[in-house]
Image (cartoon, rainbow, N blue to C red):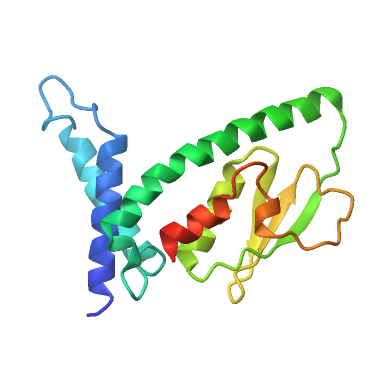
Length: 179
């Protein structure tokens, strides 16, 4: 019974996100406000499935992500993330064009995240950046193994969280949102 409430909260959050992303799908004769009826049914089914699957990651034991302030921080997080994304795109384009500083490999990143949601958001943020991909996560220590386009001069070094992004320390933002 105690796992029902987190699943309901995660399902509601997933449904709200789905509604935002699918707004404007209404057909002229078959629509409820901005959404078609088929779109609403599919969104409801997917939200129920997402709520059941993500109840532990999304909400956790203390219902951190149910706090509206954390949602606001998550929305504001998009701005520094987009800045980092633009910088990463330009950097990768420059490296591909010039052919310099391309030393691909897998590095170990120790972000020190305390929650699964933090590790999830960080690994997703890393994977969205061009030239990087989160390969594996150690579930106990929440250390990430990241494939990078350029691992630097010391491939055996364990990377600190501040060194994975170029200008803005997104790890601090993620900690502020999820912990």
